[in-house]
Image (cartoon, rainbow, N blue to C red; front, side, top):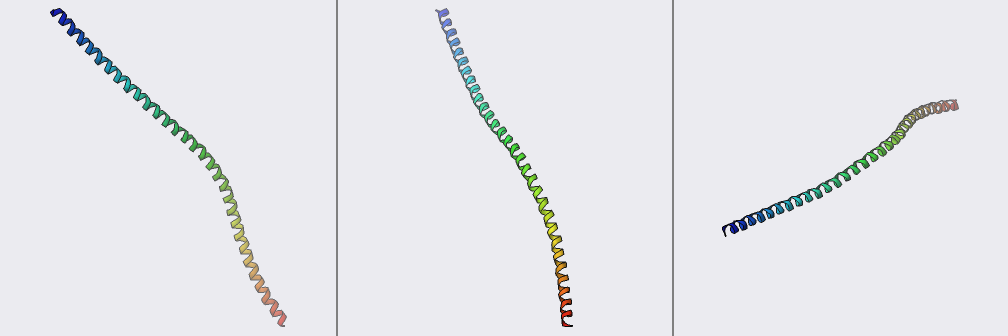
Length: 111
């Protein structure tokens, strides 16, 4: 009878140990599944960030090209502004000469 009781006790201990190992294995599998989902989520986030960075690179190239185009026109405007300034100077000189000529013509007409 003692042998039978010992055998039952050993079987109970082995069953309990099996339950502990099974529960621990299930907990570990649950943790691994959670880590897998977290990793997939992180992968998707990093992929979205990589796509956004690629888009920024493309946008940067586009904006650099537009800036180069604008810079070309800006230089042309600067040249035109300089020429307009020169023309304004010529106009002032012509106005002065015209004024002097008018004065001279009035003097000649009075004589």
